[in-house]
Image 1 (cartoon, rainbow, N blue to C red):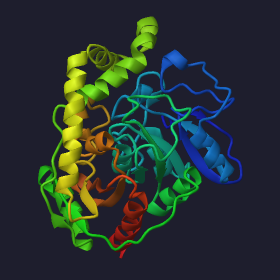
Image 2: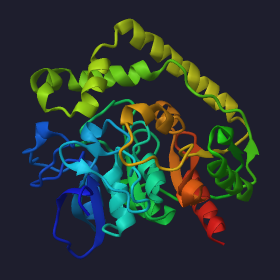
Image 3: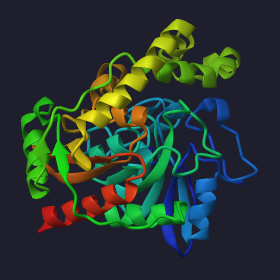
Image 4: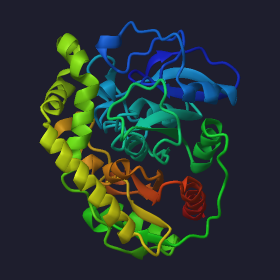
Length: 364
């Protein structure tokens, strides 16, 4: 389907892997979703790609994305808008939209994605698939073009939790499974649309989840923006005319963040980390909606919906906590709803074990 892959490769025997075109691939064009790198062919592959290949995964295509991974709709003005196979006429989400769409279409068994503010979990929610953002630093980002380095995560995407676990084991050979008996809290469902709320609360009931007041971060986005600005400062100065119009204004705002704004946001980040740990005291995991609503229309203005689409996902990039998005039924207009399971740093196996248990309960 047009818009899913930037480069589609001949299938070979093995587990089919879609690789987000933010990961370097030796001898294969890697654009980072941008016209700036339209002819870029790396000499070496990203570490995550190499590990997946050693485990028997075969790259079947470089998956399309929002340009430079800076967007939540995968409306790429250079390589096409990623379609949503699960909800035609709706956004596939972003920035790893091509990865989720390839799985939903059956073109890949699993995919590599990145997640800086929700970019694995948002497209998984939109396309009715599953995606896992590991603890910060667990999966190597060597050979992955950065967006905001202290927020950037790489991780697995698949049809189900088991597929994410299998790929994660390839990416992190020391990964071990964990128990599934956990104490689960639930939050933020009151901020979701009625049927999304109902589906996530039903999932929570299967886990005997107890409601808590979990905070949202305030005054931290200037860290994200400053880091984006630092990544693009020289590149944008030289190639501004090649940047898509739908990310140009965002990059320019990032370039304008001051030292004082960055310092204040850094202090706010530290305060939020303390608040988050305190709020989850007495529980192992947190359950929330992944998105407050079903996928918006494919032609939605990304700037207008960006904040609402990252509202439930961004906090866990800020914190670096592991977070899993998995389907939990249909909601408004018969479109997919998604639940998000979150743990503390290092509790990746616990999140995934609980996710597998919840997935099985939802299907029974």
